[in-house]
Length: 298
Image (cartoon, rainbow, N blue to C red; front, side, top):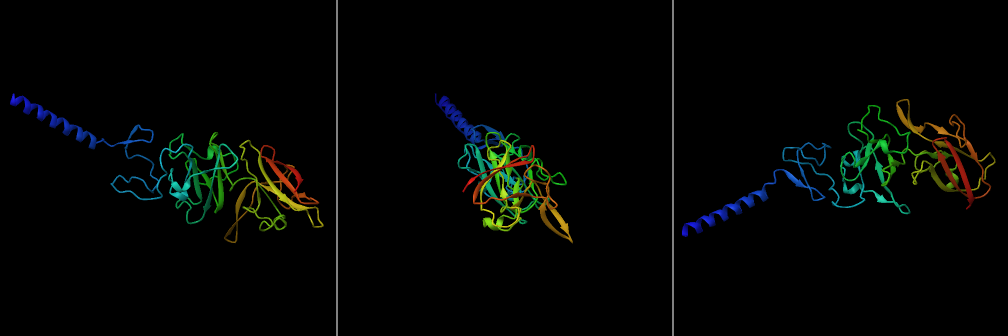
């Protein structure tokens, strides 16, 4: 009888030890956000920051966002170390739109890609999964620059510095950014108190496709023309390209069109001569390169 009790106690102790060891050793398996499991093989993408080096050491970067957030989208980019879930790179919901998100980014020489130059990005759902990130193939602007060496692995490449806004449609997964949208530029800036005349960057009249229907639009108040000429000189700039002169690189208009869709440049412009302050909606159709103007009194 005493032997049976000792045997039973020994079996209980061995069972407890086995359960303890099983709980401590998970065999390299990690719990995922959806409660499932995944095995850490050490073969994930090496972004150079915040990644497992395989030697027991890791580098630190901006902490990832809290898991489990629905409809949360990020920018995985050269300027944040290519982290797909950087807490400082979460897109915000655009007011007035059910499915449009945006983020403003400030791109400089200091946060450019250290190897290829310029700035690369994709919008992500917090992962680099094939069905969880969206890049150049989803860009609705078809005149974006392409890296001359083919770098980027399908990312969108912004080839210059500046402050830009990225827009993303969570339903269609389409996107674009303000570095490459059509824009109206000309000699109206001074009259509008909008920076310098003929500015090509953010002081030009940016045309956006926030409805993601293929038409780029912008609505602005234009003061009545007070000059003696034919009116404000305007052109629709489609691409901004680098020009080098005497070893100095500057940025200027590339492809551009008049309002009727004919090519611009070389002094060719459209004229707009309002006799009073008006609110004008410019609508550019990339299929025809025609820009229509709809106006009403301011």
